[in-house]
Image 1: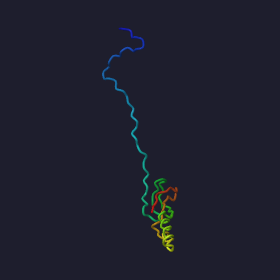
Image 2: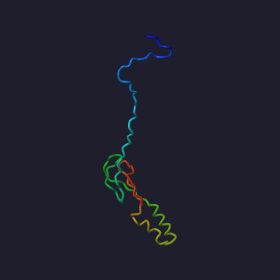
Image 3: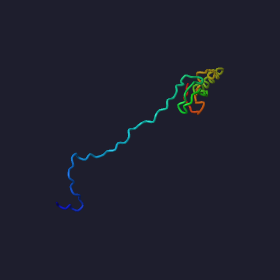
Image 4: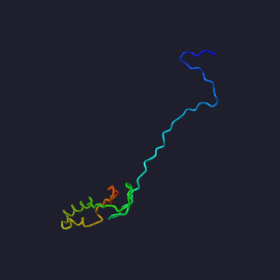
Length: 113
């Protein structure tokens, strides 16, 4: 047997199947689970829900706010028909209603008008 040259390794005997390199795969991307949000669209008052955040069952708290459309109509009425200036604020379907959980106070949904 011949002595190996300096800086090199001796040849290894072949032992059957060729050596397969080991590859590591990153785990498949799994998106975070989506929290199901109850549908409160069109509801003008409190709605019975199961909160997706705290899992409590109960009625939503509602906050009614004047929408931007009401203010635009109010300003137009001020210039063109002054006696009708406040009329947009007497139409309940024009309000923006925000629903929130009565327990954890998380916002559940909004009805934008």
